[in-house]
Length: 189
Image (cartoon, rainbow, N blue to C red; front, side):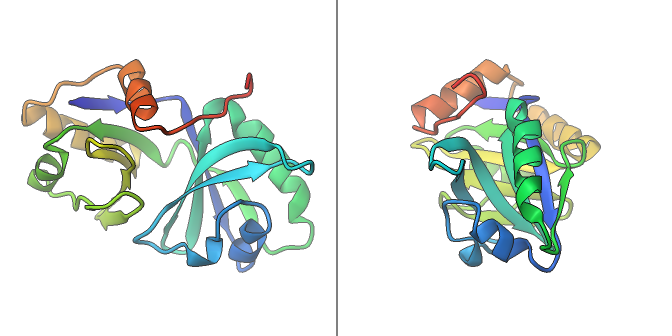
């Protein structure tokens, strides 16, 4: 099993009455099909059509969230901000509020449910339990990422450790992404 809080991801919160229309014109996926129970793996490209970054797009309450590699946060915030113009959209770095916890294990769905967390059964699906949003990622082995406030995520991590799951390194999480075929674009690439 892989269980890790990681620091290499940032989250951008997008709000406002034009948020869906704004992102529809910026990202590669159909944002109008985004729903609280479905998330999307998307890309954002520059004006020449070259991919700038890959990101997870998910919705909770009246906000849309964009999870990007930490090294891409400032670039994405700055460049997306240039396109807001007169749209009624607000972009906010939400990285200190939406902290990620990654969990990969054959028994992950069962263990998550033992801790009181709804475990989505199919890749691309999402579920909310209290203050935690859980996304099911692609892969042969069940892969999940949970988002919530830092203390809530730490509490969930301790509950999973109580069920005999050991905490692992961020490198283990990165390897699970590679094995699942999930690419990442960093500033260097």
